[in-house]
Image (cartoon, rainbow, N blue to C red):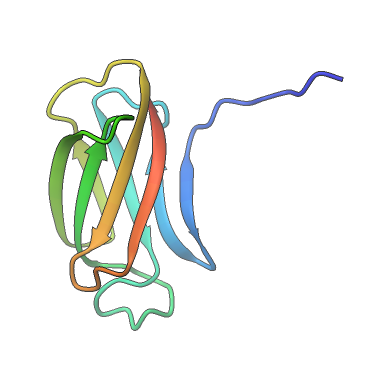
Length: 110
């Protein structure tokens, strides 16, 4: 029996209501981010992660392609400074108020 695969449209990283949602996937000129749980002011018990985040977009070989700082929100649209070529990219999101809280995700460029 041949396995059947579907296209990944959204990536959710984390567990127990904590993490980050990344969409659309594949992406071309932007991605949307939704931070869930943790975050400054949330008491670390889930819910809104309105805080300050450093978000890095990295190439497969680890080169930093773009760095953005997002403050006082749990949702953001990250507009790419350059259109992404087809391939795989990595996202690293670090809570600047709590550096031990960080998330990583892979997404596809078109």
